[in-house]
Amino acid sequence: MLETIDSRQLLAFCTLVQTGSFTETAKALNLTQSAISHSVKNLESDLRSQLVTRTGRKIHITEDGEELYKDAQNILNQMQGVRMRIQDRANWGRGRLRVGASTTACQHILPNVLREFNECFPDCILTVAPADTPELLDKVRRHEIDLAIIVAQNGLTDVEVKPLFSDELILVASPIHDFVQNGRISVSKIAQERIVLYNKGSQTFGLIEHFFRQNKVLLDNYIELGSMEAIKEMVKINYGISFLASWVVEKEINQGSLVPISIGRKKILRDWGICHAKDKKLSITEETFLGICESVASNMK
Image (cartoon, rainbow, N blue to C red; front, side):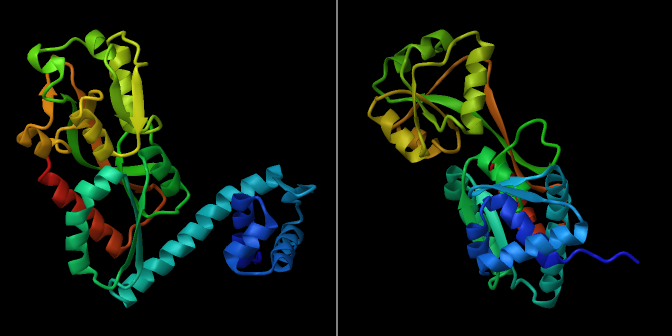
């Protein structure tokens, strides 16, 4: 019978790959640098293969090391998943849940979800990581978070996405902007104005940019901000115009501080979803959180 690989050695090796440093790995695992070095050497001896090389202070992963890392990550994630599911059953709701969401979702979607989730699992240790969709997807893939509320995109093969709701990005302006008196505005005319947009690296920015490309118009007169609230304030004082979700500006439109502008039949639509790594088996708490998100989102459709 073949001997199994020591899970502690696998953990030390995977952490070393992620940090690229024996010192940082020792800090992350609360061990000495010598202990990490011995773990990796013993793993190499056990497998009879060199997994890492050193050039000065730099760590390089060999081809064998890269192959092991892929499998080792899956093994460690599965072990962690088993532990969490068993603990969930033994200690109902006393585990942990790591959730990721955009700042907009944190402000407008999560409060109702968290209120209901806390009633079900008051003892669960819950952390929320605010970030944009691309970063959240990376965190999900690396199993740094369990679930993430994202703007869905095509081609996600390693992530499972459950649809939540769809929304529309509408053009809004200050009540004193010239567009308010002109009725429907062409895309080329919009491009001549200063447009205040959310982070360039976000999925939302990408959808707006794609909309301009579809209309054969260059999007180059814009500024970007990392806060929807800041964008709304800039538009209110007529510093520029913006594309924002209808539910994000509903209050301001009702108050008259922002005005929606027609851009014709073509719309900028987003599909929201909640995702997790495809190889992840959800725990009771994770399944419950996902279900609550679907329930809350149904009221936003």
